[in-house]
Image (cartoon, rainbow, N blue to C red):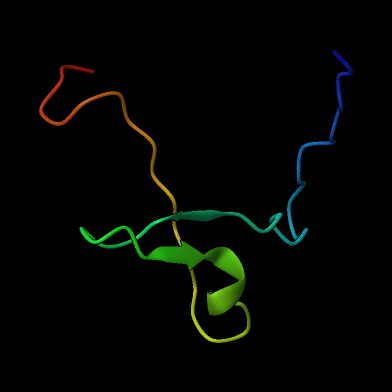
Length: 52
């Protein structure tokens, strides 16, 4: 297995493109679809209504 080490984006760097399921039907949404159009904020958490 080869490991690819990528550098973490720094302040002011463009975020790497990625896609996620965006609708209940499974339609994908890509970060690139928002580039130069809107600001994007990503929040990651373990579970809804979990403590902490």
